[in-house]
Amino acid sequence: MWHFMPELTDNNALTPAAAALWQQIPAWAQAKLLANVWCSHCGRVTAITDFSGEVVSGDLVLTGACPVCGATVKRLIESEPVRRSHEI
Ligand SMILES: [Zn+2]
Image 1 (cartoon, rainbow, N blue to C red):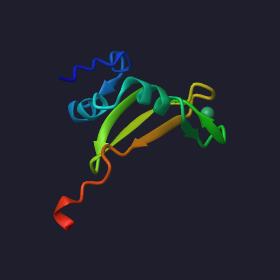
Image 2 (cartoon, rainbow, N blue to C red):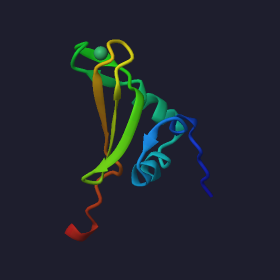
Image 3 (cartoon, helix red, strand yellow):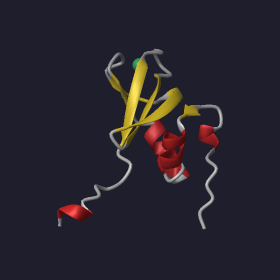
Image 4 (spheres, rainbow, N blue to C red):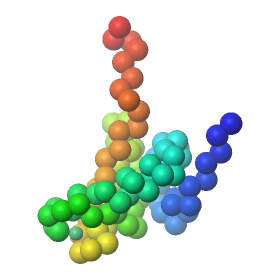
């Protein structure tokens, strides 16, 4: 029985579909994802803060702000290791 209640989602706005995907990610992995986001303005990997999330083409996309410069950053999270059962 899994029963994750990630604190990280509490003050962020995720669509229900995005929240469902997000909650399947272990907390340690969530923290890692949030702390490794490319900021094109900084030109390096920073983090994402104040993010919202939605599902785009089956993947979770977080949109938030770079904590260093405040620019908008996005983090794409491929929700599942490709499901190709009906290709076989
Ligand atoms: Zn930045």
